[in-house]
Length: 349
Image 1 (cartoon, rainbow, N blue to C red):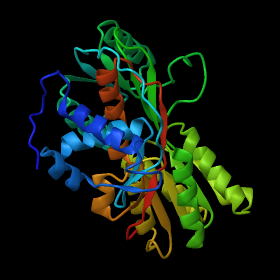
Image 2: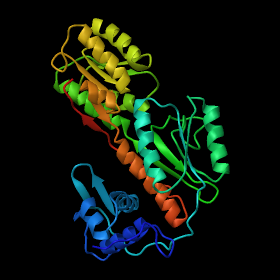
Image 3: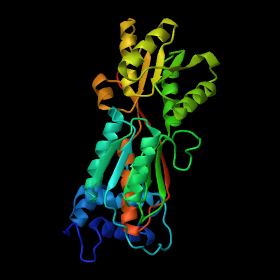
């Protein structure tokens, strides 16, 4: 077993050395497309380091398209290419500025994951919430970029689309004065909504409603698309605006239950908790007599045994940090766009 310090004589981080060694093994043909890659614990022992250092090296291989990681299954080689671009001078960001709209339960979970990973890069972290104020969000972003920071944000509008366009359900990474670019990690809300509609349909619960406290175009698109794909009549899918949080979900669900609705896809776990309370208050027992599906797979969902769409925030945080590491190691922020497909976590309710 080899034991190495976290830094190295030539100034590179240990994860960078591990990344280069593993990449060379892929390029040399030791691992071919479709082969299973060694798991983290094996690589940790091989290089005599920590899980975090190995994870950072693997994250860079993922970002550059050499491997793909599957939760609970393992890591597969997906691509090998000849040669590699010459490294550029690595930028040194003074800090990372994380800018979010709010700190509701699912965002807070994502923030904890991002902050922990960034502090171990190591990179100082600042956090701001703009509360939906678009002008404040733009001012925070502009100030951070002018200061040379690495900006990680979930904007009201994607960069370059302030004059119009859909809100983007994802995290964007923009470089400071030393590295330009825009990396994006998106969550495919549409795919999550489709899976939820199929589950409610399999249980025979119709009509079904989509409860949102704000415009969620991806969820709406997937919801409407799957209702149509299943050959259901248009009135089998109801889009209903509701107030935020538990009380918003409860009040809206009460009205829809009185009209015969028996399935609810909710844009957050908090709204779903309210809808679940309304279903039970109506004397119905989920999942036999009604379906309630949240979004976020948060601690609240786990505590309630609530079925929820998991946006895979841990994978999202890993991809974001992989972009950061690439910028720090190669001197430029990759203008990559990564889309994550959510997973439906089916629980008792």
